[in-house]
Amino acid sequence: MGRNRTEVPEQERWNVEALYSTVESWKKEFENAMGAGEKGPRWPDLVSFKGKLKESPEGVARFLDAYFELERKLSKLHVYAHLRLDEDLGNDSLKENFGRISSLIHDFQLEYAWVEPELLSLSQEEFEKLLSHPKVRPYLFHLEKIARMRPHTLSQELEEMLALSGKALETSYKAFGALNNADLSFPAVENSQGEKKELTNGTYLLYMRDPDRTLRKTSFENLHSVYRDHANSICEMLQGQVQSHLYVARAKKFKDCREAALFPRRIDGAVYDNLISSMHQNFDALHDYITLRKQLLGLPDLHMYDLYIPLVEEVQTSMDYDEACQLVAESVKPLGEEYAVQLKKGLFEERWVDPFENQSKRSGAYSSGCYDSMPYILMNYHGTLNDVLTLAHEAGHSMHSFLSRENQPYVYSSYPIFVAEVASTFNEQLLLKLLKERAKSKKELAYLINYEIEAIRTTIFRQTLFAEFELQLHRWAEEGVPFTPTLLKEAYVELNRKYYGPDLILDGGIDYEWTRIPHFYYNFYVYQYATGLSAALALFEKASASEDAKKRYLQFLSSGGSRYPLDLLEIAGVDLKSKEPVDAAMRRFRDLVGELKKLLA
Image (cartoon, rainbow, N blue to C red; front, side, top):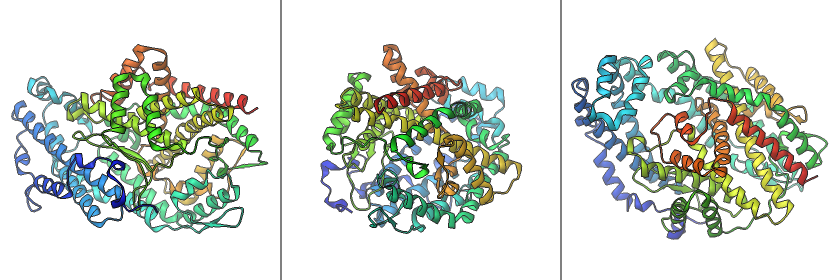
């Protein structure tokens, strides 16, 4: 289990004290921010604007100033609480702090559900007059986004009622989370030596990469057998979640669930359709890779539990953390000295990263932070090459956040989720390029190429498979088709058969894999992994060939959320409304598979 959190030296912790020096100072700020209490409005000064936004543009500007100032304070409080909790998930007082700020943010959202309906009660002419007023210029794009929602905004009373239903509509998602993360336990598994090993959602991912095929097979079967035993309950949870999406979509007068999810960010449905269409046209490339995988592993048949084992043994498994930071900082030099110096400063001097495991620390990795903080990176670093690439990935997120906050006002400082994976994947490509240039053997080069192939397989092909399944779920709900485990498993297996082709045997639990995928509860989120990687690969190719393209990419990183997502990507030079970026990623996939064939021939 490793060290207790109190045993971790300061130089191996992220600098959360830069946000609040002590928990007591956080609590004091929380008390100041929480407002008047629960019986009346929490923030009466802000609520006093209710019913008066129509009176003058100056009043709208004053309200928005105060509104975003409060939101900014709550954001800072939330970031500190969640970072502290993730250091030690077993700490009850940290859980309580996180619960308190989460509840306060919910109250904030509920108390201001009236704002958009009131603004949209202005006539079209009045609203355009408001937009042209110099006092509201700092909020122009924010107000334009509200105006875009005019056809789908209800009366104040109905919007408040919809906001009140928010917690109830989260029940299915929360129930699945409780089942998946806390209640389910899995039978122990055995390796080929007959040794028993503990099986959890975390160890499962490690076992899927283990050379021991017996361990992989029993892990796959044992894990999915538990989900199969809960398939009826999970099917109802999934149906409840999709029905909540349908409820909101119909209440707000969208033609379907997908439009309701994509419309606010002005994502054309063609982006989603083009992604799926491009996969269908390139199934043969994935089938070819599956056949190659079967051959290189020397297996008479290939199963789902054979998909994640590396085709080439990982060469570098003992890189210390400082060396990894140095390598990541060096890899970003093509983006210019200013970018590289800032990242190095963050990694080595400002303590952006919490690098190592300790007891009860959150697993995995992420980048976080707020407008009034440095970026924060959570890692669980063990020295593998995969860990180094994860550090590069999270550093990409963090530099995107850093540049957005440096160059944008608070209201536009957060980049939209749609473009979130672009910078992270771009930085992975920079590191891979450096590593390939320095590869000391064919084996090392082959490992790196296979890593790239797997990134495209799991992030574009697999996530698009999920996106296609998610679209089908919502279409069934819209058509009034009730979900059953049989309906879902047959559709899911058929999709896997199309994507992976005849050389992959679909058995041992794949028909119940849909029961354990949390992304199906996220409301048309998962496709963005695939579009994000496609955009990143296209931008990396452009920036590697042209100084102008590099400048445009840095401009994109500095633009935060100041435009709609597709417009942000067009600044950098990528048009995701066309099929070209995804098709280019598919060409890249084919080229990499060809390179791997030659290397390992």
